[in-house]
Length: 234
Image 1 (cartoon, rainbow, N blue to C red):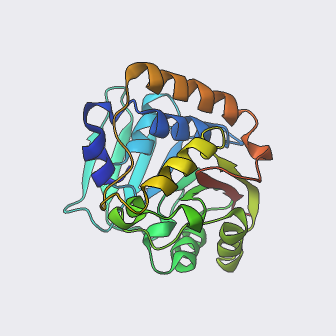
Image 2 (spheres, one colour):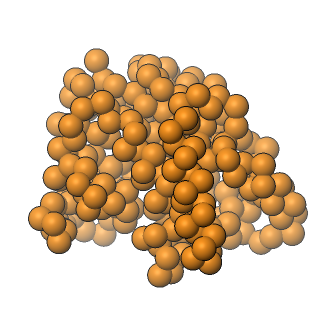
């Protein structure tokens, strides 16, 4: 979760439909039992914390060069997270790059760096924002470099020496409405995130809609707010 978005969500940061739905989506891409997570560009480590708290894995390493210092956190269920600025290799079962590639100038180099450090059998989950035509003040505020299609993300993955096992869009159910709002607000909204707290009833409804969508998301090669890829290191 981006630090700017965390502030915008306030008390709803841990229960917001967008992030909870994306975390649940991750769990549908596990081909085997999960023990250790590597969370690249993790920021606050929100996705690692959610997975560990819900019984997915026992340890996580969050990597982010922006950390002021390196530290370890123990969660209430006994699982632990290390926050580090860099790593030399990884034995993780799962590597996350959750809305990270769009923030760097060379997305291929970043993906290749961690692909090369991963052990055989490691599962990678990547998410990126979809469609350049949805570019808005939201992207400027979050300092994005680009948005993607499934084709563009596949090209990035292959250029890094990997091959996507699954590649699809997510948040397709809300795409028409969200895209319309994004385009209408494009010319009038100052630089800020579109993410914000929503009423409890709407929050629950959107979680339910996205949970249903996650059961068929792998067939969605048409449209959504996010592009999702699963890779497996040979």
